[in-house]
Amino acid sequence: MNSYELDLVKSAQKGDESAFNELYRSFYKQAYYFALKITNCDADAQDAVQESFITIKKSLLELREANNFRKWMLQIVLSKCNKIFRKNKYAIWDPDVINAFPVEEKRSYMAGDKHVDHLSRHEWLIAMISQLTIHQREILVLMYFHQLSIKEIAGILDIPEGTVKSRLVSAKAALKRKMNESGEVAHFRVWMPLAPMLLLAYRNDYVLLMKDIPKLSYTNFFRNEPHALGNVMLAGTVAITCVAGYDQMRHRVNEDRIRGAAFTDETGTYTQRDIYYMLREWAHCHIEMEQKTHEEYEMILPYYNFLKEQHSPYYERLKAYNNWAQDFETNKK
Image (tube, rainbow, N blue to C red; front, side):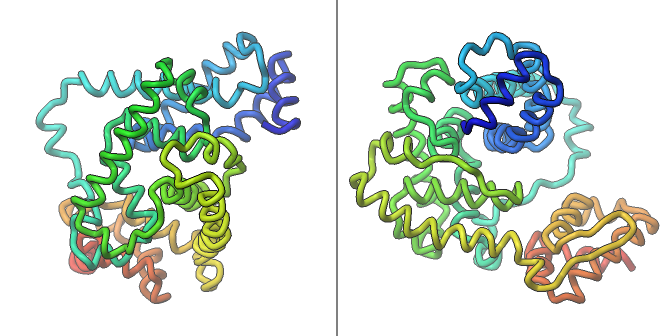
């Protein structure tokens, strides 16, 4: 944490409401991303983070060292995620409700080369990670995104350091199996060691989701990664790749702006990527599209036409996403 963030924590502990609000704005994205990678669900992640900051506000005076705020926050977020996970695990669902749910998106790596072509190596790796167990996901995101040491992770998870190491080895072994089982390893020409691949994949994923580059240190990663080929060699690999990786991230975050493609109406300005996810949220499959009214189609049609007229790469992704564009064209008539 920097001196400004430390001052915010100390001021918030003294009851400064504006300092707490600024603290919330400063750490919300990191907390939300962590919760999202643990729960694999946007709604659960938002609930977990909101509950976490309510707890943080009530318990802030219990934090003895302001410098430990981020680790303390992650511990609370993890606790809330686990609470939600346990609640959902034992929930009794009405079969009629389950059958009414929209068809889930098929993973791109299971849907053929056409889908794989629209994924980057980083996106593919994040998709692989999403299939791991909750314990495997949490250990990877703490190690490779939040850059925590083995000791710090042990404190957050409340387990021995030896258990952290064994879980880390187990998680990476499971991930490698998923990568091999997907049949797309050769397609993505995976030449880089897994550790820096994870580091860059999480950074890229965070940038694309949050439109923000995380300001986190790589020190703990270099010091604690147990299977690195040597700190100097790994540092050189990551440093060189980070330069190219961050350039790629910035390029992709600004891809729509570079193409001059922004759609503006009375509700605001939307990039191609915004519209792509808006359309996917509007309807996930042809069954859901068939249930839409004429008025709903009229409302969403300008956004769809914009992507189509711009020859946007995101329109191509819509076409590849379970024949979304074809179904839309059929049903809107």
